[in-house]
Figure (cartoon, rainbow, N blue to C red):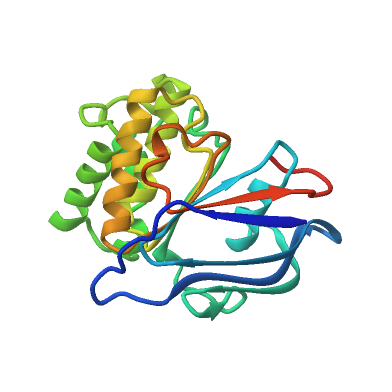
Length: 237
């Protein structure tokens, strides 16, 4: 597995926030005993927007699943906020938008209910939503271009709108690390620009962003560095 890195621009370090958010050293990820990626060395700092690119089958999704503990770490080290992944417990600091989801089926849920679920880790058990929590949900809906959609059933949304709802759910938790797997898939150019502005605002406040994309498109001005995967064996996309 090869990693090539291309800097796009150097982010200004946010005031009062420094240090690596994510660090991988010689990491190998896979499923069971079958490796998909090997020898991954990577760091992501606060305020960085890192784009992960590569052809289908290169292992882009396996990389993000691996750093989140959703794929097996077969060798090497992964650290989140300076803590080894195996000991990391403060997952409320991490937001994740998966590549595929079943938000359109199952139990009926409105857009607001779905987005509000992303706030639960901040609210804590048996506590009611406060004004700050409701404001966080409103801001997340607005940032994802879903203001006015809050009472709509998720099942009635288009595929692109459902993707935006998942982004809003992740944003509602005020993450310090936001990981997005193909967030622009099925989303029109106008809403990709909305997402780009949102990511720029997050990065300016110190949030680190890792985004898997086939093409950077409207996200290009926001991206600070690009990593390209090549030569992976096995499945992944």
